[in-house]
Image 1 (cartoon, one colour):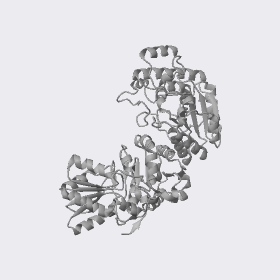
Image 2 (cartoon, rainbow over the protein chains, first blue to last red):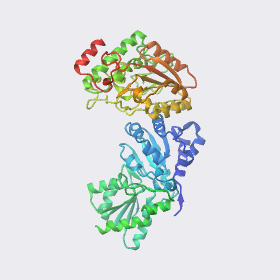
Image 3 (spheres, rainbow over the protein chains, first blue to last red):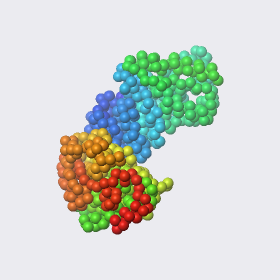
Image 4 (spheres, rainbow over the protein chains, first blue to last red):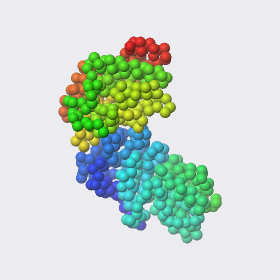
Length: 311
Length: 288
């Protein structure tokens, strides 16, 4: 599969949006060469605010800009902007529903060598806990560009989680993103894999492999974690009778918890979960960590077999 | 929409009722203090001490310094005021009510179910409230954002933010102080209601802030020390801030917590405790 960088797609899309909309401002906390907001900064220095190593201040400044009518994109690494700034996200963005787009790069364990301090694996639980926040994890660079355009044109606070390494492309250029409407990537009747972010391409690979065992898997890209597409989950549970949820995140509070809540309430069926469980990862390459932590296509296949066996 | 075309720092957009004399401001502050007592007593909870210490500064801002229009709270060219020390919401509500943002009768609903006057201010519920509050140390960051937006849009309005001395123990306050200096936000003025007390005792015993004005100077600010109950000093400090080029100004206002009510003055007990009906009656007599 061809690969492309989600954060480069973000940088390019910001530039494209900035050229047509003068209300777009961008904030960063000394990481713009990594978050790729530096392209916007170079072309629009008067609409770029480098807050230095002040993530909490950055969220407050972004709130002030948004309250003045700006569409504020605030970026940093996922781990800093979610964990360190939770109080600011809560009181200054969630409660007043201000128009700030928190775009976090370096989500999950594929940050790799930097180690557990830099692996944002709690961010989805934290952000999904905040009323009014829209939480999006694009599956590839094409979906990233679409999600960023949608965030810019949709009022309210957003959290968009991107990755450090390049991500396999799962969509054609013609793909159109609809907020809150999950995408059925592949039809199937025996089980459904609900995946988000980097796990989507692995889910497709797992479905291909399982087809050889005559297990016919549906694959859903749940790009929007909040608001969750409850309807597609209930339909998948009804029609396929088994669900697997795959995410690069701890077990608690992320996509698995959110899907399970819908399934338990609407249409209980056997489920299995592919995630990081309840422990942090270590330093290592992204590939090594994905294997060690059980986030591979093979792990998804095992989870599907487990869920199907309990039907 | 009201016509604000003549607005400038020299000719307030609004009527002369926002251009009170010192004698009138003194009476207005007394009225605001009476509201604080009445509404916290009616609510049965709240923070009277830090509301009373800020009363004179708030009166000076809303009835002399700020250009604002209660008939049009979203007037784009209004001066912004942020109450970062959100527990002092009662004094802000009192000023907004007296200024005409909502009827003073609303004050009696403070902290009650269904009220637009939340325990800590909520920008989505109360006309005239620029930002929500309640977690300390955040307001200066928001004010930096407002001031940056004003510069991007070539607007002439000013941004004022009131901090408590206690919340200067929060790291984020100093992040924002660095940022304001870095961006040379000379249209931003911070006012510290330095009443010397916080919830559990004296600031100097709990986490000493001194030397305080030197800290702000070292962070690149223009610092002015004043008596926060002296209107001439408050007004001249605001004027000096207006004239300061290239630097943000911090007005460090030495105040008395509970000011105006003898048994509340310098009494840490009234940081977060409402007066009883009996205490309220006594306080109102002193403030008559």
